Amino acid sequence: MLVPPPVNLAPLNAAINAEAVARMAADQELRDSIAGETGLRGQYSFTGTTMCLSSSTGFRTDFELVPLIVSPPPPPPAVGTMLTPSSNSISGVRTFNGDGTGSVVATVHNINYPTQFPGSASFSSGAATVSTLQSDFTYEVRPDRTLVIDDGPTNGVIIKGGNRVGWSVSTLDVPKFVGHISKDWRTIDLVHETMAVEQSVNTSPPGVTPIQQFITPRVCHRERTLRKIRD
Image (cartoon, rainbow, N blue to C red; front, side, top):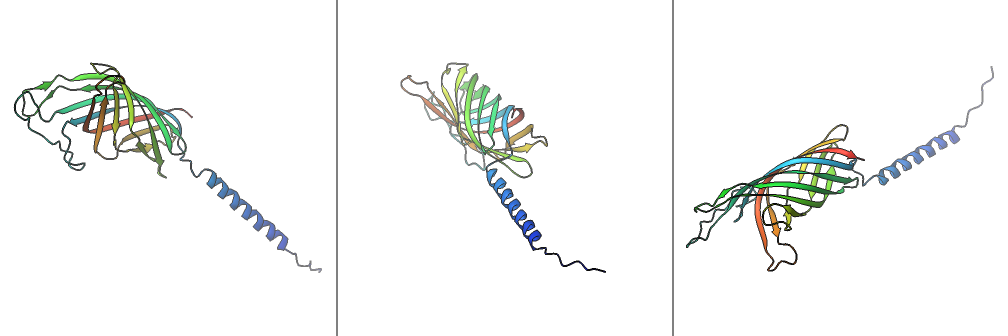
C-alpha cells in the first residue's frame, strides 16, 4: 500500500488565520462606525398630561418638596405665599437623531385653578392658556430598552388665553424622563425618574416696557406616550 506524502497545511492555516484577522478587523470597523448609534431613530408623536404645584416663595428642598409658606406682611393688601395647582395636556413630536440627540415641538393646553392665598382673604380666579414650545434633548438607550431623556430648557410662547398672549414661557431644571421602548420599537411610555423643584419663567413680549418677568418654583409630575410615525 502506498502511503501519501505528508500534506503541508501551513498555507491553509495561514489563509484561515488571515481570514480570521480580516473578519475581526471588519467587525471592529463596524462597531466603530456605529459607536454613536443608540438604536433609536425617527419621529414619534406623543401625548400626555401634567400636574403641577407652584409656590411663589419656593420649596424647602428637592427632597422635602414642601412649599415655604410666608405670612402676608401688614398692612393689606400685601400678600405672602401664593400656591397654585395647575394641569395641562400636551401633544407634539419628538425627533430622535440616532446619535443620542434630538428635538421636540409641542402644543400645551394649560389650566391654573382658582387659588386661595394662605392667611389672606384674597384669591386668584384661575386662568387657561394655550402655548407652543420647542426644546433640544439628549437621550440614552440601555441594553434592556430602557430610555432616558434629558430635556434642555423648553422655550415657547403663549398663543391664546388671558392677557398674556405673546408672552414667552420657558421651563428650567425639568427632571429626566425614563421609560421603556416596546419590542418593535414603535411605542414608548415615559414618566419622570424623580420629582424635583423646577422653574417656570414668564417674560413679557419684546418691545414692551418695562420688561416684566415672573419666575415661579414648582413641582410637577408628567406622563408621556410616544408612537412612531416616521423612520
